[in-house]
Image (tube, rainbow, N blue to C red; front, side, top):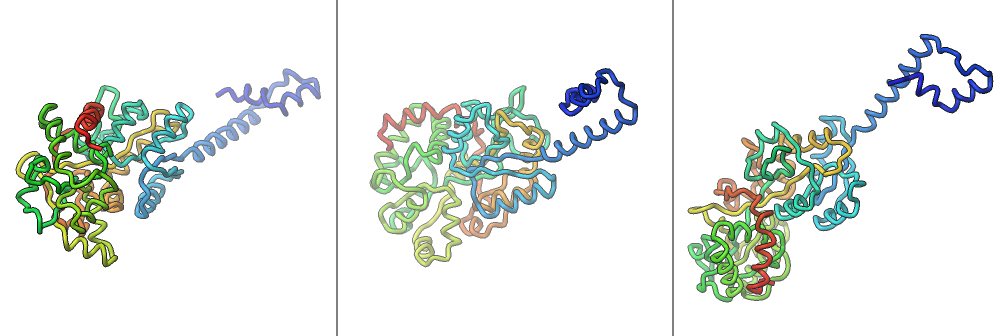
Length: 373
């Protein structure tokens, strides 16, 4: 850094030279040293002020506050957070483009992470910490440039059923949802919702295009009603007798199990839960995850935050905030609601979630063809 040049360009110094007609007056060594020290202090101060992370988050759970506080205490990096739903965050990133202040983006579904990745919203990163901690099938496929997104918690796509109308053996697999035996019993939310899309793309990958589309058509034929509402609505519809079988993410079931509302407790006494495909491919698991924003101004802080999310303490905050499962190797949960529904030792599908990105458009077209609303 040329300190003399900086000082000479300073308006006060230029005025001094002009006022006293001393344009070439040399600076004494102690003046140069003093100015150099001042510049260094200013640089360090700016660097300290720059220890900030701008986080765009689709997560908004109380336990996440402890997660963020823990990161700041451990690193000194302050977090500025923008909350929103997944679609709103993606639209904001698209509108901001290269001017976006976002450093890390947290989303709550593999389909949404894949969509953001396809639109070039993530910066590939390399991290041995993440490579060692997070199973490969729960991260974007590695390229020479690095990995674009990483899952930090999982949830299972379970089947909820009415034991008075349906036997557990009849809903032991996702494939059975298309069995005519369940005619008029199946309820789901919208077929194109990311939670369903993630499952359906995985099923198509395993069954093949022709059989996968036939399976989707079979599910539509077994509908008790047109798809509507969210996952909680599907569980409550089974409890009310409107449906015999429904799909739900495991954390919705866990919330109902932990609820203090009498109506929720009564509903959960009426239904049963199955983790499908335990004898074959395993239950479909989806993720909540994050990626470093493409135009981050703080890449080192962003990678530090990603690595922090893989630590045991952060994993439990991150997962238990929404009754999910931690994903880092060697980290386990003692969530009693998940335990009550038999979710602590289930076999999860190990298929690489990048199939979601590959199959999204194709499966959406299938849903349109079979009339899955």
